[in-house]
Amino acid sequence: MSILIENIKELIQVEKNPELYVSGRKMAELSTIKDAWLYIENGLISDFGSMEELNRSDYTIKNDIEVIDATGKMVFPSFADSHTHLVYPASREIEYMDKIAGLSYEEIAKRGGGILNSARLMQDADEDELFESSMKRLDEIIRYGTGAVEIKSGYGLTVDSELKMLRVIKRLKEISPLTIKSTFLGAHSIPMEYRGNQSGYVDIVINEMLPEVAEDNLADYIDVFCDRGFFTVEDTERILEAGMKYNIRGKIHANELDYSGGIQVGVKYNALSVDHLEFTGKEEIEALLDSKTMPTVLPGAAFFLGMKYSPVREMMDAGLPVALASDFNPGSSPSGNMQLIVSMASILYKMLPAEAINATTINSAYAMGVSNILGSITVGKKANLFITKEIPTYEYMPYYYGTNKVETVILNGEIYM
Image (cartoon, rainbow, N blue to C red; front, side, top):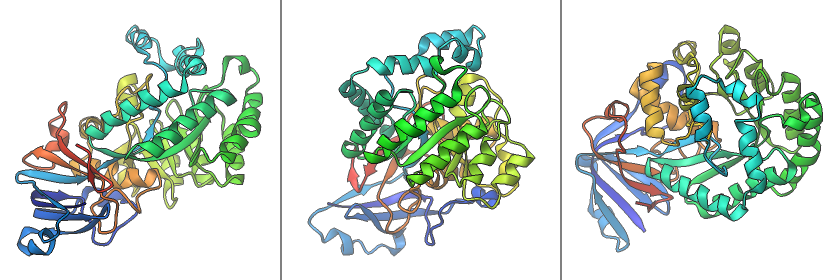
């Protein structure tokens, strides 16, 4: 079926000459067409333009076409959420109470909470139940406008449990209409039994987990939590080098808790992205310049944990691109609502609406390796987009936070809702 969307109040993030990402001052530029139309055919964006240029009969003559009147409404490319942990066995609201009582993320982790808590539950979790609960979360984020998502393992921390998580993600890829990328994060935390023998656990990640992950083609990327109290630069280098032997590119959790060296090691090994980045200074920014590594900020986690905020303005002023993602997980960011992330970008990080939209579409698509097919309104790209309810301006998207402004979702050229 083909779809013609007409009378669009404003078509957002249009590209005639597509780029893989936007950087620095260009992040404040957002190309749009007012009073626009968009044509979708064979699951792809086929054409678009202003209503005055539309010869409607060229399209409506077809019998299998659906025409959507978007008067007063806007069309956006779907959000790309490049960092989530949405396959998990149970929520962690009890730890939320611990946070309210004043315990830090590190204190909870040291006593076996946090990631280790989810890991214990994951070992006993039923694979089918994990799949079903994850499908519900995917439906939830779709309804808020997400069209692509990266999902990490990392709540397994044993060979069997990590493989279980990755098998669930593989099933989600096969069933869900979302574009999904899978990331192996065996080095998410250090199991209690390996405290004092951290290198022994790294050996298991490299020599036992990774070969099976690669053999069964379960991961697009490999990740390491390189930060204070977690994995060292040396650990990270070992894991990234092992991933390279299997042709699996790196993505790094870096500098959330301290200046860990995670950004520099990510750049050194050509990681696709380095994520979190609360502790980012001049040296880190200089390392990222001229690299192909996308700095990715996770506002939900910093907000939920009460942490310092990443210096996004300094990064962009230096000429860097910035992506934003939800970090949807049960412990430090229990929300996959990318509309909320856009609002946080403006409220907490003082990003202009255009910068926030670029950061959650084209740049975050790059951070999960799909900006060649998603992230903008471009002829030939996959038709993953959403139609808003009637809104006055695109700046209204971050401004009017707390409500869902999406009315219609189109994924792979088909109406989802």
